[in-house]
Length: 76
Image 1 (cartoon, rainbow, N blue to C red):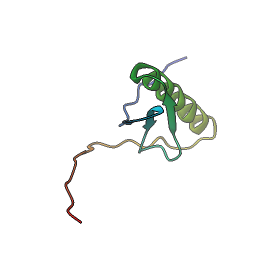
Image 2 (tube, rainbow, N blue to C red; image 1 turned 90 degrees about the vertical axis):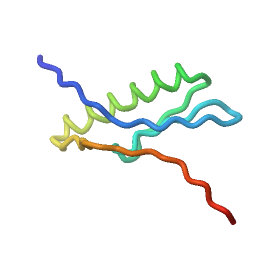
Image 3 (tube, rainbow, N blue to C red; image 1 turned 180 degrees about the vertical axis):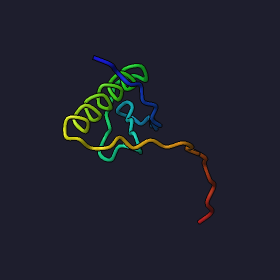
Image 4 (cartoon, helix red, strand yellow; image 1 turned 120 degrees about the horizontal axis):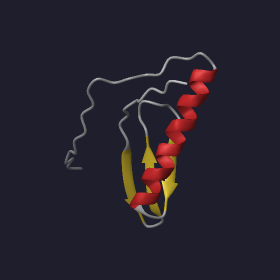
């Protein structure tokens, strides 16, 4: 069986309870972990399951060619 490699953006946030990760290209694909390393492994597993499910259902896999992340200061 041939496997294909995909590349996705992952956003990781830290809060008081640990880490939260989301994959913006895959709607509803997110995970959490107590450590940075754990959340990386967990989101990787979540992406793998998400992609496997899409492929099993004959759905396309969305691929972004460019993603930009920035932060803004907003005065209120």
